[in-house]
Length: 513
Image 1 (cartoon, rainbow, N blue to C red):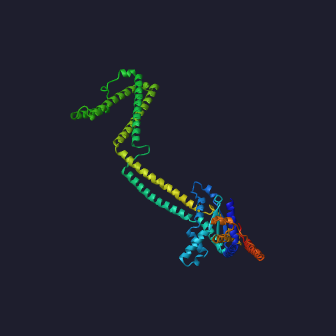
Image 2: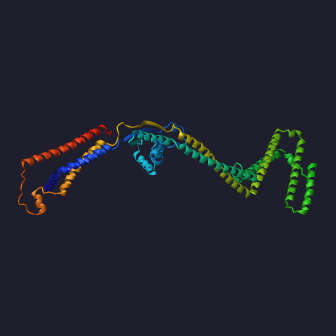
């Protein structure tokens, strides 16, 4: 610690020895620095603040009908791209700075300087933006800020209609394409229906569903027919029980005379004889003829019964018999109706079975055509809805009610220049001058060193020091030394006074912190 203090004291003595070098260096640095500071041109900072209101009553009113643009994102992107090269070149034209450049290099330098100087600040959450620009010419600074403010407002509201128009144009192209597809699909369906008329599926299911339904209906009709025949036979049996005397004395079909039926039976017998000459007894025509002859003979017996009943008028007018006759007629009518239904379902079932290979293929092709048509139709209708939504969204995006700009502070320039901060610069120059003076004196003491004590001499030379001889100052030397000290102090006081003068002048035009 003592060695360090001794070394420090030695440097201080060396600096004191070359103090006039320090004064000269300090004065040179101070004067040069202060003159340079006051030669710096004044710069005026123009500012403007704008508030962007992105909340609008149109958003909740048109929710679900249109696609609401993200206005916060659009404004944020515009604020980050405000100082792009095209915008800077536009501002140069707006404030007539481009006419001052004659070469491409000067123009590039001008663009670079403007891009470096212009700034935008935002609070983010509050959508409050501040545009700042400083220049030697206050009017030019104000015009530049005003130009960027105009571009910021126009850029946030503009270019949206063009984007929505492009979207509408694209959708309309798709609509035309789907219209052509729909026309082709409709023509294909029309031609397919024309070629396959009678084989197309109708409402109620496909071919196999119809076949199953028809088969079930046929079985149900056959069951109901059997039930109706049983009911009719039961009525007939009841009628027979009511006439025992007739049943006992019932004549044979051959004993009953009925010219009309007999003539038909004779004709059928002759036809049957002719058929037997060519076919066997199992031939369908011979079987049908036998069945028809049996039916005619049965009918002949029934008519014989009725003729006998008519012989007893009182019996025919019996209430019980009349009720049975009415029930029998209803049963016969039901049986005839069920037979017609069974015949109809049988015909349908046989027709469907005959078309077992053709109809499924037709149905599959028809289903495919319908599916393609429905898909194209659905897409076409959706595109129509999207087109109207895109038009409404475009109008909504370009309306001024959706995005409102409020100029909080119009572009303005303060009367006092904002730069340079001469108060700070003058102080820095004064501090630098003091350091330069001390450094110069220290450097001179290192270049031309002297021994300040016998200990230093002994350490450096390595020889023992036997003693020292003190300096005896004369009266004139003492006065001279005092004058030197006074002069040194006055030079420092003058330097400090000059610093105070520059500082006072800087305080008058000191920019706000």
